Length: 408
Image 1 (cartoon, rainbow, N blue to C red):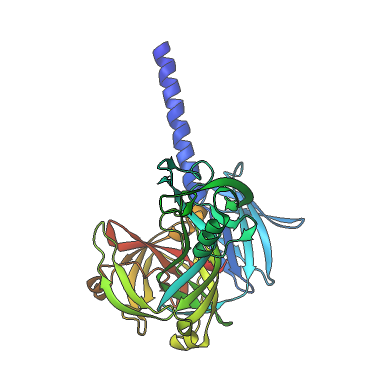
Image 2: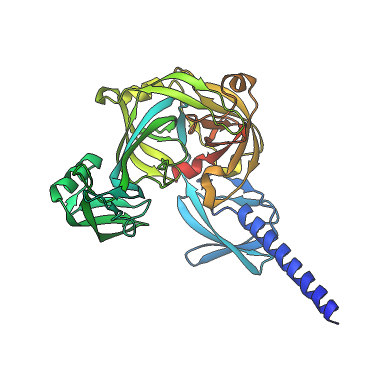
């Protein structure tokens, strides 16, 4: 009898686990947001055993997702579609947005990137030997990796040098730091102690900027740009850097390190961080890319005209192309294959999986390399996304972001 109960329990647990796995898979297959073009019929086939209600205000329309679904709207508006599995179990609330037809200029050219943080970023805490020979670590239980120090003793922190100077001027004793942590701003106190050279410290490593090479994805009709397809994160803390200001610079590609299994390659650029070489201003650093306004010189450097964007429903598994420049000159189109498409809002930079199939590009770079992040992905004459990451163990494979995610 006990053996039979054990089998029943084991079978029940297995069925429950199987259901949870299937539910999660269907949840990931269901997009969080659907965009459709005003005045244009859009047909989507979700092939989900689900139904729901499409609503706007008090009006609601029943829909079924187990057969092709046709959308049509004349005016710019937002709707909500509450989806239920088998018409009973809540699955997801999907936002449906009606947008204007949009065209963008694909760029594909390398740019130098420089961003300055808001305050200074705490990379880590540590110990040092004080003037008296004792080991100190004042900030160990007060600050942590990823914190931003915005003020010291009420004075706004403008950079690393300014922070260190203010610390020396304050001397020994308690220092009041205004910090930003996980979106909250508050004050903390920590003690500054003189080390053996007489320099006052609190036992932290800090950073106030980041720089590198990336690829410009697009320019819109107003001179606005989007690049990278992912945000600029601090290399030590993996924290999305809080942007105070940033610039795009003219860059010359001087070398290519081919990607190999376990060792991502890299485009090496020579960047002169002089104000005369600024070709754009960065005003946003977000999970989905960096954005701002470009100069007329940068606009003139892009030889291509505008193309329509492709929304998620326009993207198919199959052949596509990426646009990038390997020598800093005019960008060229290279063949790729889109192998997988997902709708994972938690990882919007990895919803497109692609494989480089162009032999010339593989010969030159080994596949996708650092510095190519932001390279536009085109399919069927539409700009559908941007390259974001490379598979570390296979440089011919990588991820991409949908262009509609970059556009918000």
